[in-house]
Length: 65
Image: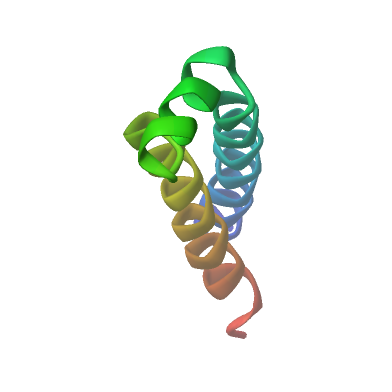
């Protein structure tokens, strides 16, 4: 039961971080950085990567059987 709860928490956290990272990449600061460097800010990228990792780990724990 606790592994199931942990997996759901990780998946929810992953979605929240992913959404937060996408919003951060659309910010004015990130857009200015993208003009000069060609990539989003480190903060936006870190949030999106952490969100994806958390989502994948949570899904793995939930559905591995």
